[in-house]
Length: 546
Image (tube, rainbow, N blue to C red; front, side, top):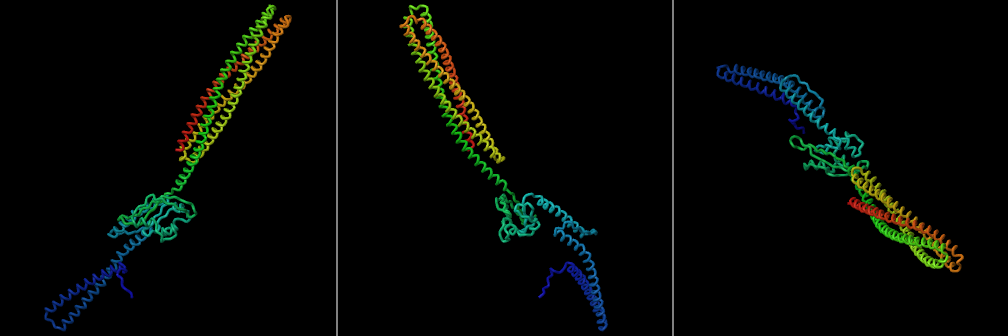
């Protein structure tokens, strides 16, 4: 059954029918009024009824003609009026439809200056303003370098830029997805809920919501999502807008910084262990240096005692020489002088034996000192190796901090401080090693000189024994007294020269012992500086770990 719907009747027909009906009703009313007036006038006149009926029929015909003429005129006028009004209105309708379809370059021409032209100009002005604002909005959206999407109230995508597709690793152009449901675009299922739809339903704004996922090709990403409903001038929600901020690089940088921090902490722990070893080694070395310094002082004291004994022995030898000269002048006193000489020779032998014992003790002390300097040299080698390892670890820490870039700059400064401390440690170790080498050289020379002194003392003992034999022979033979005295004088002169050599060697030993003691004092100061550097290194490592 077909039902008539007035809403579907075109406006031009409604206008034509309305104008025609209005004119027809006016003509009918006019004819009815005329007929009524004529009929009233005829009723007042005394006319033949037959003629009256004929006159009324003529009047009705005339009224009908008037009505028909009025209707025809109204119809023709309405057609002209409709054509005059409908043509510009149709142009205006076509213009607005083109604008609604997005064709903002369409134009409309209407020359007459009337109300319709004013309406058309108003619509054109409105369209120009709309074109400007839409162009501004479209330009802003197109100029965005961050991923963004715009949907309508049905979550249908109306705008999608290329950065959004690059983020999701989609190779198709944005135009392919215009008109697609947002859930279908994201999840492949348009029935799934989306944050855009939730924001429009609840009329809320989402700011910097953290999310993560993977692109179509498997690349992971981290995002900050911002969503806001779009409202018209009346405050009604007409869509939603989302913009995405990728934080993948920031997350990766944070992970790398944490990894670099762990590497530096591990290196700091290793450096701390090395610093503790360095501190222990420096303490042990300091104790050994103290012992060596004490031995050097003892050696210096004994060298002084030896020098005194040698001076006494030299004086005794000179006395023997003078006695021998007197014996050669006065042979009669040879026996007495020989007895005195025997007594003096015994004293000389005892003195020489005492010097020999002291020289043996000095030789033993020098051997111990030489061994201690060797031990110190070994310990200094260990400290040098530790300093090299510390320097290498500091260099590795600096390299790892450089790889971290800006986040690792603070660790690079700390690693450089560790490297400087390691270099200072190596310098101090080298200075201590040079001092130890000087001590070892001096000690070796002391040992050599002491051995020479012992040899000379043994020779002096032999000469003294021979002198005793010569004195004993004086008792047996006076004739040989002069020769024996001359032999004693000669031996005494040789003994005096030997004693002078021993005295010089002893003086050199004393000088070397003093230098050794001074070097030990400097070594002690260097070890104190090394211990201070180790403490500074431990403090620096503590700051690194904190």
